[in-house]
Image (cartoon, rainbow, N blue to C red; front, side, top):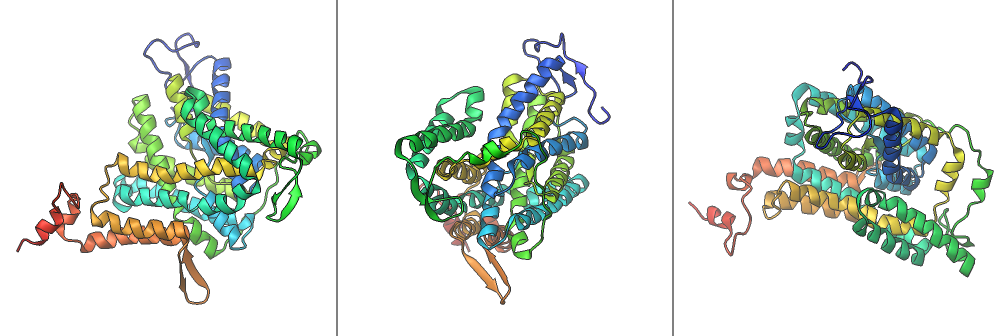
Length: 461
């Protein structure tokens, strides 16, 4: 397949035959392929511009670099893994913590760049030693816990920053977004977060017309009288222009906060490759290391110029599943659209004007969904939390991560929140597993119907 940039025409190029799929190395007619690319852009768009906004980064640059990252990924995997690399939401909490510690955008992107390097090296390790190394180092009980604390660690950001900006807009936006996620079907359900933002925009505009300015937290964190929706910067922005870039800076405190997210990124990539392999009928286990390394390289490239991290997007898996078109040509078209969006500063100004109350309503659901993905990992892999070998490190790590517990070592070094929680879960699980009695390692339940298996075995001579 070479570099995966040559495609054969599927059938008549119009629609797949009944029961057939358009394989990654096939395509429909170019007009239909471009249309599918536009659909992929819309599917990833909501989360991909919410992520940089929440991290305080330039959304124009983020969208542009997501297109560049997708091209890099498709070339690296030689067109075997159809995927769009959108902006990762896993670092939203990391950015909030770093900024709370006094770091700026350069510190945020510098920390994420280091994670990208670690992710790239992890991909190379997987290529060398096989996928088993992932399962040995990060079993589902550990991965689920880390994803959970990454999401729930964000709760204070919503509670103390976004929601107080306009509680009624936040409440209405939350209710609308929840209804959209649950009640809408197909394509519309996959862009429910985006629809929630549009709804929040409209409500904020109506409230400004009906009630005037609001007295609350503004974007700078001060309590002032201000408009909920301020579009003054939109009229001043150019239609065409390059996004703003900045160089990263590196601080150990910021890097330590960000490093645990590498576990979530590896889990996301592994799940994506497995899902795509099942849908296309092409086992892709041999590409897992390459996919992880490509994601890491794309993240390094993006953050080197001031953009966010990138990751494989489940939203686009849904588009492929619905259309049964897995052509990588559609993803090349999507990447082209993303590059064009990135060159429109007026678009970035519209995104930057999102009211705080709207973000409050969105993030209440979004952050919770990120956290509960950890629980989904446990359920899917049948992790038994009645087993104390699983329960103890998870319980300690999640409370540390969510509660913001800190551990000071000397005068200049501190671990806290996500970083400390991950260290406790990861090291605690492996340490306890090395010391635990054999019956616990069999992962039998802590309590059967009225009888403790572990108690019975512990009483045996």
